[in-house]
Length: 119
Image 1 (cartoon, rainbow, N blue to C red):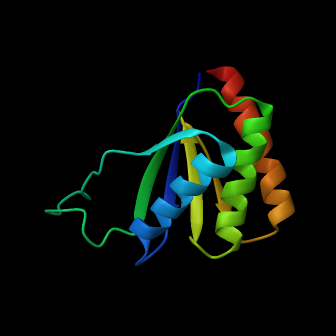
Image 2 (cartoon, helix red, strand yellow; image 1 turned 120 degrees about the vertical axis):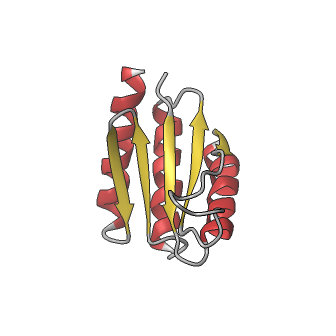
Image 3 (tube, rainbow, N blue to C red; image 1 turned 180 degrees about the vertical axis):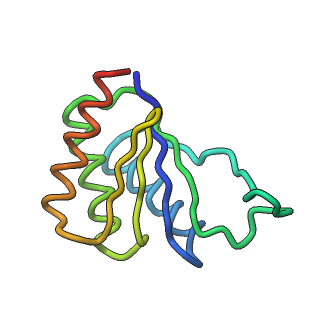
C-alpha cells in the first residue's frame, strides 16, 4: 500500500489551508488523512512563518477513492485555497496548480491509481 504525502503551498495561510484540505479529504473523499509531524526548516528555531504544510494519507486508495481525492485536491487549488499541492509517494511526485481543472483532475486520478497499485 502506497504512502501519500501532500504538501500544501499556501503562503501566509499554511495552517488554515492545511486544516481546510484535511477536513475536505476526510469528509468528501472519506480518506484517513492526518497532519504530518511538524518539522522546522533547516537552520530555523521553529516552524513559524512556513508557507508549506504537510498531510499524510493512510490506507488504500481504490479507484473511487482516488477519484474523490483527485476531485477534492483539484477543487481546493482551483478555489485559490493554496497556490499548489504536491503529492509524493516514494521518489515520485505530482503537483496540482491552478490551471485547467479537468486535465489536472484526470492526471492526478491516474497518477494516484498507478501508485496505489505499486504499494
